[in-house]
Length: 113
Image (cartoon, rainbow, N blue to C red; front, side, top):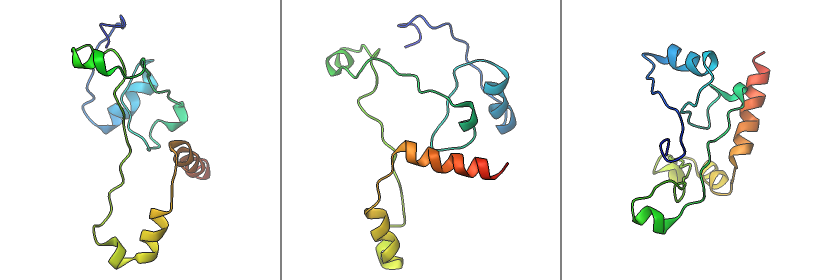
């Protein structure tokens, strides 16, 4: 995608966690970050977006458009219903957006100050 959209790029790999965390704060750059996580939350990073998924283009090898979908999956004990039925019911009835999760993490960060 960098070539298709004429991005100047240089790839760097941090040698350890400390360097990984400091690179985006020390250099204006595009960086990889998984969410939900508080590591770079204060930087208010923005997702890099591409044109909407185009199946026909992808089938012919042109992958300039965004991916078809991405998901956040939650994995729990396979016997959670037996071990903690009320917790399983709560989780089954819950639905959180990434904004909801980030708001909770902001509260956590603000309480550490």
